[in-house]
Image (cartoon, rainbow, N blue to C red; front, side, top):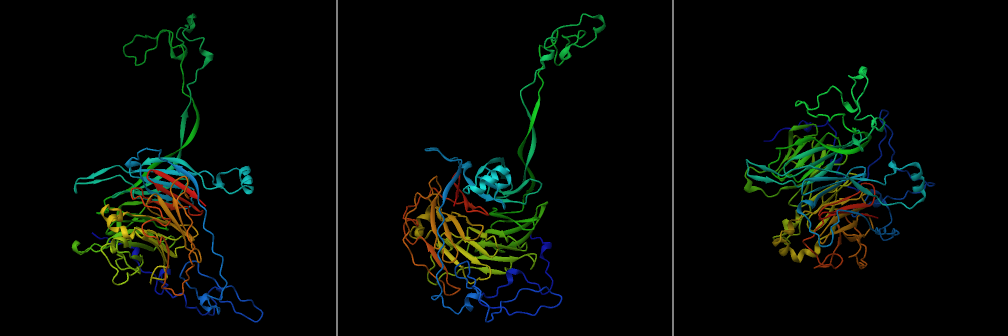
Length: 581
């Protein structure tokens, strides 16, 4: 049953969402005279005979032509070519839970989710056993002393180092008696909340239930060795000979008038008392992280939850399953608002399902969700309470006559991520990575080939269900690079800035460059229209980008990019590998 949301109120007349500003990049705005009541905004530069023309800005992504570039009288062939950025040299940093030679991996230990927090000082992983493991950064400058900070000013910058912080059991296996359905404890997604009072907040979900956790350091009293007071040890076991002290108690609680063989004594003392009495002593207090479940959001999804996403307002979040997206308030777990519902009246008419959903990083009214048909829909919560109609649709149409049995399967989007600036969306389907500009819905800005070499093997991949694997993707904090996983525990890093042809294949091991070979030089492809897209990646069929055969039993599905540094954390089975550049 659909419930209306109070967040669907329309904005004031004349206002428009930033995402509705779909003006073409080649349109040049004309200067306006500022009114007395409005602030003076910087207008376009006026060129005089003595002024120097400014350097025209260039787009940071392939295929985006700015207005200044179109106004430049020089043709693209006459402009000097900028030096192409050098590919990053990735190095091994750390590994947690490394598997030994010949050691079998337990199913419950396989990592199923990875997420950095916004500061990059904490990292969370979830596994198929329902556990959440937290790691904290140890080389943060804020935690260093003044001497260490002064030493760091003259030393070579070090890579981020993390250490184990704590772990807790987030979900347990359950059984739905009404549907006779077993609910496994596997962690599907982890999202960090806003920190408050030195406490960490985490949202974790399995197929049906979302939990809100608070992890905070608590002072725990530590009991050291028992203490013995030696000053009274000589008096133990003696009785007073003075008649005036006949009622005086003996050391350690003994008394000369006490009946030691009384049946109602729980702890009878021997004659003369104990030889010594050891008392526990509190020597210090340790700060130990303690996880406590604050909220449980349950019974709101009929289908498996595939994604959760925190809102930038810090108060709400969304959860998505195959057919619905619900909006929650963090403080209210008894109700949620259904904002997207793609379930048809007749389930036989179902043609696509929701695969992923994510809030915009800065606009609390905007979110995007992807579908199994390869489409990404942008919706505005201010339009209506039930956002069945999208604001924008991003999809790439297949060429006529190129459809096959596997077309729709490999087009299904498994993951989407907003860039940190909120301008671009990165999507991952089975074959490619696509970068989309929110202001251009005619097609992707750039397309990066990841599994093109597997196209001849789609029949085999369908038979062993590998074609349904859900690979995640991530962007660097500056938006200049992106990464995704592949088979044989490989992951690929692409450069997405103008002139950057970086396409690096790395292996999740202590030697990430082990399978790297020299890539043949390829001519730089320039874009002359907005509708063309750059395609880079493995052109060789039958092997990966470096000519290596694929092992479909080992796959790297989950990885995350540090929000401020060139550091990647990726999961290979039960092992967490970290690399830096």
